[in-house]
Amino acid sequence: AEVRDLQKRQREHGQEMELGNELSRLKSKKEYATKDQDVSKEKIGGIRRQLKVQARERESILKSQRLLTPAIVSRAAVIETLVAKIEAVEDEMFADFSKRLGVSDIREFEKKQQGSMAKKAEMRRALREHRAEVEAQLSYEKSRALDEPIKKVEAAQKKTEQRLKKLLKTRESMSVKVEETEALMSQAQEKLAESKP
Image (cartoon, rainbow, N blue to C red; front, side, top):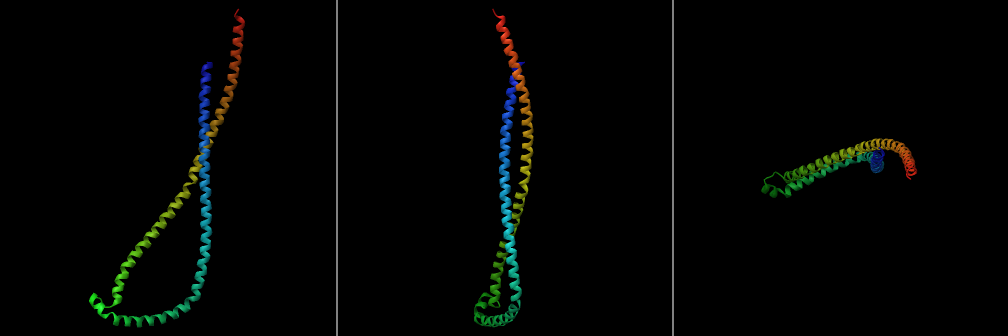
């Protein structure tokens, strides 16, 4: 019976060691997750500050734009007149070239060239927008996923601490029993020694 008690105590001691190791691992995991969350909060704060600065800059630009609108309208009329004159000169200068290419004027040729360039630019713009959306979604998912692991680690840590407390109480009661058993063994050995001639 005493040997079984000692074996049981050894198993419980092994379990205590395992729980202690698991608790240390969970505490470490929680610390890393908390640090990651703090870094993310700092980054979010920085981004919010940048957004405020950009909003102020945007408002300043819009104000300047409103002030410049009348001047732009008057300049547009002058530019239209100049463009008409330039087109007339271009038509005259590139008449032979346009005939060889089979286009009515040089602007038709340029429009074809610009059309293919515009398609490529539009594709690049759409790709950039899609990438920005994906990055924003990824950022959101990363920030959302930080709270879950921390909660899981905290719950596991709490369970482990409770198991450890229970095992410590068991160990204390076992220690008392071991002391009592050792005292009984000591008394039995003394009696045995006294009974021998």
